[in-house]
Amino acid sequence: MAEIGVLGSGTWGTALSIHLAGCGHQVTLWSALPQEIRELSETRRHKNLPKASIPEGVSFTAELSEACTGKDLLILAVPSIYTRETAKKMRPLVREGQIIVNVAKGIEEDSLKTQTEITEEEIPQAEAAALSGPSHAEEVSIGMPTAVVAAAKRRETALSIQELFMNPRFRVYISPDVRSVEVGGSLKNVIALAAGMADGLGYGDNTMAALITRGITELARLGTAMGGSPVTFYGLTGLGDLIVTCESRHSRNRRAGVLIGQGKTMQEAMDEVQMVVEGVYSAKAGKQLADRYGVSVPIIEEVNRILFEGKPAAEAVSDLMCRDRTVEHPELSWQG
Image (tube, rainbow, N blue to C red):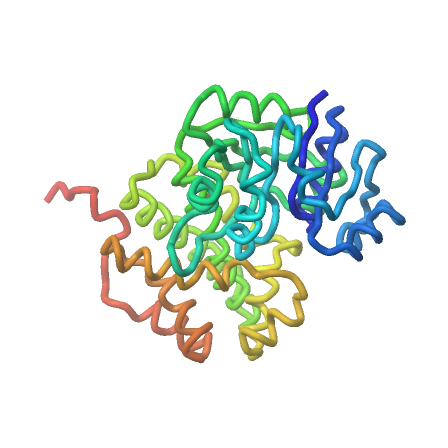
């Protein structure tokens, strides 16, 4: 049995707490909101995970020191926009060599850093890793079979995470390609917004398939330029995560996109979803990274125009369809 601290009591932090307690570990779940901790303690349920109950192996706290001190593993599960702020507060409480698993998906808008890069910067004594893949909290919390990837710089670290998380309903693969795992997990949310917009406009399966396949091409193109491996983008944390986020009723990014496609503003859509829509925050970062590395990302560019310039979604689709003619795989050669 391991002692594990989970920082962030949103749906994903709570679902992972339920899962890890089911693996036999003792989990301390932290929230910065005392009222949220009281509700979880009294009901042992999360309001956005109605089918799941929280087992006795999970305790709750609003004290950061209680969640961080003396733990075998820490999981940073706050929304990506709060990662740096939370990590700053954690720093004096974290021991040398402490493994911190980042499970939020997002790229910081100002610095263009990934979640593990932020963690390493703010908590230099820790060893940051990432856990990502097609894994909706609603399904993990009730034990539906799920496969994810644990990515770390050192194989030993990835293996220890795999050992702690894995059970017959939660399969964990390992990877050294932390950069690609995080880029794929972050920017797929931008493509999911586009997929939702297409659905909101009333488009069908053909459009969705085009967005997914051309979207993964953009992600792989950018991630490779940033030093990642293209192979990773055609696995769980790239294509797998993209499919589930674009197609699932659980996806908050897709849901927000649907509302925008139906004519609502970005803010109206976010207010209606009532959860952090990571793709909105990652869209600007994706465009800035593409500019920095000189990479073409037309879908991500159009999503930015819709979100931040007020461009109608239907017009953006038309502009994507009417771009200059090109080939699908320019690296392939013709015989004649």
